[in-house]
Image 1 (cartoon, helix red, strand yellow):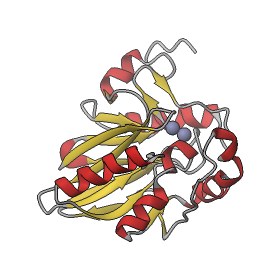
Image 2: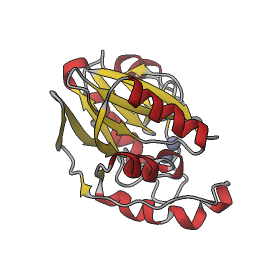
Image 3: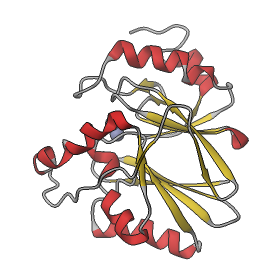
Amino acid sequence: MQLKSFTFNPFMENTYVLFDETKKAVVIDPGCHNKQERGELFDFIQSQGLVPVKLLNTHCHIDHVLGNAFIQNSYDIPLWYHKDEDPILKSVPAYAPNYGFPHFQESSADHFIADGEIIKFGNQQLKAILVPGHSPGHLVFYHEASKICIGGDTLFQGSIGRTDLPGGDADTLLNAIKERLFALPNDVVVFPGHGPETTIGVEKITNPFVGKNARF
Ligand SMILES: [Zn+2]
Ligand SMILES: [Zn+2]
């Protein structure tokens, strides 16, 4: 499996395209918000000859869904996310103009992903793991064969997702990271929703919020 990342929109959100030798691809959290960013994503998919088959959201805060409608309109593929993110996505149009996105286009789920569900594309399998707390239905997508985890806004290099947004809860996030993410092997590489990748093993030791010597 191959992974391509983009960093989009003023929130510096990481958008991921996963694909394999069959050229089938999934797009995760498309944050592209203007013509240039949409073009960058579209051109990559085109240049690689990829065929997107699913659009996945780890969670539905505005920075992760700005390009949902663009991807759905471009490729006519279903949007999948956890059902507890539905009210989060439904609330975006009301606040999008205040965040500087007056032309936000709505999108909605074609399928609700369950905790533990296996998501297939090409010859690949992703396991959806519920890691709530940053938002209520936040999923991470784990590719066991290559030990890669698309982490969204759960665990960052040296940090964790904020919990002061609607539906967020600090204790829930701390417990979910420790019980669910830290159950993955130490050498799993986490590709987060913001900033550079890290590994489970490194964060278990050094993360100031959830590591061995957590300070907060
Ligand atoms: Zn978020
Ligand atoms: Zn984010």
